[in-house]
Amino acid sequence: EAQVTQNPRYLITVTGKKLTVTCSQNMNHEYMSWYRQDPGLGLRQIYYSMNVEVTDKGDVPEGYKVSRKEKRNFPLILESPSPNQTSLYFCASSLSGVGANVLTFGAGSRLTVL
Amino acid sequence: GDSVTQMEGPVTLSEEAFLTINCTYTATGYPSLFWYVQYPGEGLQLLLKATKADDKGSNKGFEATYRKETTSFHLEKGSVQVSDSAVYFCALRGDYGGSQGNLIFGKGTKLSVKP
Image (cartoon, rainbow over all chains, first blue to last red; front, side):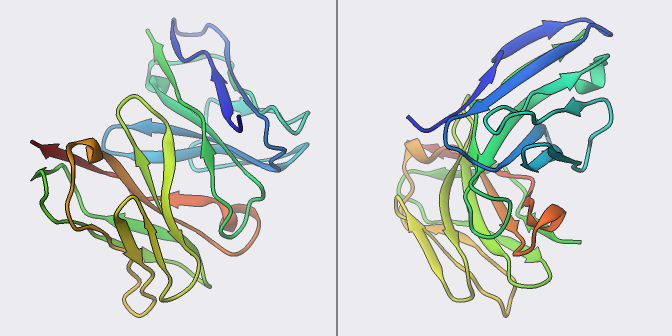
């Protein structure tokens, strides 16, 4: 089944404890992206990747890192999480980063930072 | 830069009522337009899309027409069901690469349909 898989789905952590949210897609998509969803703010893009080894900042990159060493994986790294990073996170991918290519979303990862 | 504005929610309707969720956009060039839906506890999934002016996207009884003259892409359904309760996002994607090719979302409209 074509899908985007995120892990973990739920995580409670404490301030400053490094964590990684993994994202993997099995559709050979070039484009991958991370969003966070917060009440009243909709979805905001954190980072995106047009292809392997190519990453760029979205609208809210502060406090996050990403890497794209392989086409299928796009992990989101929080080096030193803070409470303002408590949010619902979505990974998404599409065939390419332009035009009418449809984004396929993962099921989401709900992160709570205490 | 490019942007999407959609009507604020929440919207509460009775079953079989007519639904309209307004969406307008600002963009250079010829973007593709999308409606995504997020059911409770799930990720977003594509509902419909349109890639050029006057295109009509449709799916599951929902429709939206790409109106370049009014820069709008309003979502409509003639008779909603309880199962349509969800959050609906309007989005656009530019026809260029790089950041201009990123999907830009509206803030979402929560729809609740009562039996």
